[in-house]
Length: 185
Image 1 (spheres, rainbow, N blue to C red):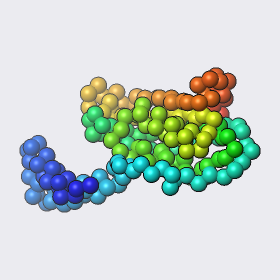
Image 2: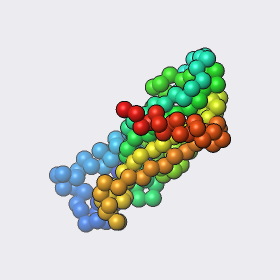
Image 3: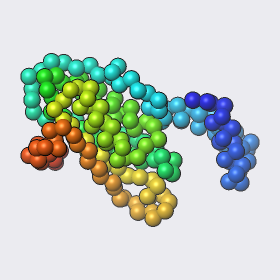
Image 4: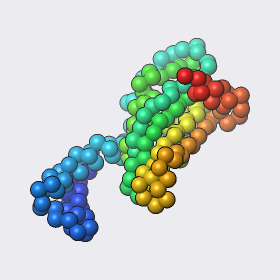
């Protein structure tokens, strides 16, 4: 991440919209934006998901579902935030993953310029491949500020996507079970 270029770009942007980057309230904004970028885009360029996974041998063969994982991401089309909850389920095949690792995978893919559809696919694919799971399913419920604060301004609208692979694509009763478990409080 090129911190100096980010600072310069922010100053240029502020001038372009008619602001004075040297006024009291904006003087430190370029530095703040650098810190923000380091935090919310920390997933850009990270490819080593192996370091995230710690798995354990287990005979368990039912659905493992981690639900209501909060996330924040940035839409690659408008550079505006979208946020919500991710629900991740998988069918183990001899090993399970530490539960915090599922949240780390969500963070890995949400902390980059992204679209919701790809994020769900990436989480499901990574979980299935790295765990050698029989399949996985990811449901994302999100509010997109590109829909609520600009454009059509539909406050309260949510986008829901579902990505699935492996046994979840073949076995509709497992898909139904995923939604039933998700619906229970």
